[in-house]
Amino acid sequence: MPVIGTVYLVGAGPGDPGLFTVAGAQIMRKADVVVYDRLVHPSLLKLAPPEADRIYVGKAADKHAKSQDEINATLVTQAARGQTVVRLKGGDPFVFGRGGEEAEYLREHDIPFVVVPGVTSAIAAAAYAGIPVTHRDVASSFAVITGHERDDAHESATRQPGQAEGRRSWEKIAGAADTLVFLMGVDSLSEIASKLIENGRSPATPVAVVQWATWAGRQQTVVGVLSDIVDRVRASGITAPAVTVIGEVVSLRDRIRWWDNRPLSGKRIVVTRAREQASSLVDVLHAEGAEPIEFPVIQIVPPPDHYAALDDALTRLESYEWVVFTSVNGVKGFWERLAQKGRDSRDLHNCKIAAIGVATSDALAEMGIRADFVPTVFTGEEVARQFPEVTGAKTVLVPRALEAGDVLPELLIERGLDVDMAAVYETVLDGRGADEVRARIEEGTVDIVTFTSSSTVKNFVTAMGPTPPSMAGIVLACIGPTTATTVRELFQREPDIIAEEYTIAGLVEALRKTYAAG
Image 1 (cartoon, rainbow, N blue to C red):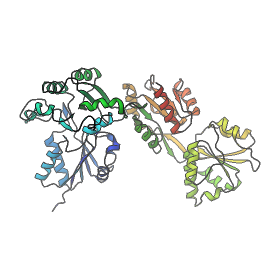
Image 2 (image 1 turned 180 degrees about the horizontal axis):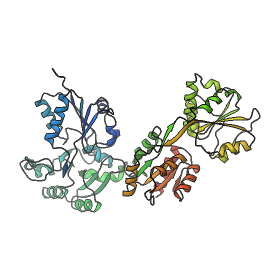
Image 3 (image 1 turned 30 degrees about the vertical axis):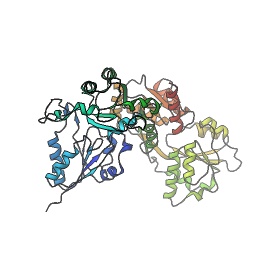
Image 4 (image 1 turned 90 degrees about the vertical axis):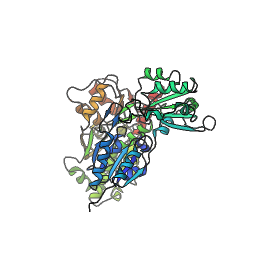
């Protein structure tokens, strides 16, 4: 007897990946097939194993990738093959997500299923707009209503009146609760407003329409009253997907708005940092309301000499007075190679340690090493000027990137030191995603490009190709003066933002200050 798989009806939440449930993430990681909707955040699809099939069945008001009957059949067919099927639905599957219909169909075909609720946009959209659906002083009840019904002979969203449309009793809806939340109702907003006014709601009732709720960089909110909200929404250009919140609670937005009034809210920011390091910057930008666009133009790889210079230096560690680390990657690469040789931090007991930058110092601290010298300014000139007097062997080891500049070593040599440079890694071009980023620049949906090293600047320019898109109007933000110099050389313009503290935290703070002032 063939083994039947299970279908998981999983709510993907309203958009913000951080609102996806732990249960949903656990199920995604064991999926064989993911059948997903239009409003599922793309990052959630990455939770499934790489080999899992991903089947798009998204629906917009005027275009359906698959009909509901076809979706139902897909779920049964895949489960009948013994597959673990995740039906990933925007919001909550049982709140106007047709999850109930799919569950009925699965039961009729003897397919086991599990329902995993999700955060519904009915509540999340209001919350991210700074509107509580209930408030002790304003509203003690709320109702969630579909913004459209369907003709019984047609798919949802046809707007053709029929038996299902007749179920809507406007005289009851108008007074159903203090707060009314309409899902999928932006196209029928005029009808909703007029029907509510006709049935007793005051024309002065506050209304908010929230588009792309909880989506960093995309959420927009328009506020008005029942009598003018249609004109305001039309003037704003807001279209589906949008949630409409109606009631006195909307007036609280001015006091408790929190998501879309931060300096970086709505900014679309390209992150060029290496893929394995990008997450820290991406997470902070997302938390600030921006839309991070990951474009890791550099890839960290072993040096082409297969660590020959570093291995030679490791055999002579006791001869070095100082070891100077210039980057987090340098620390990581050095310690990985040290471990591969069966050695550890004890081999540095005769050496003093210098760290160029706070992040580099922190990386050393994670290895149990406290830097003896951290300059107050992280340029080559200042490092050499501040470097302590060396009275011993005067021999210095600098583990670094293969392509690192010679300014620091040359300045140390001028001070009478013997400097050995050993490549512990190389940064190479990673151009994956270049076409998407180029297209976004050309269509005007990039606001800022961040650069965290000279390598990211050089590789970004290379990845854009021989006929790069115009960067006019796009803010160029640099982590420090060295990176800024490379921007000037390659873009023939002054960087818009240069961090005062040459760290990721400093770069984010510089962005905040710039847009808070603006």
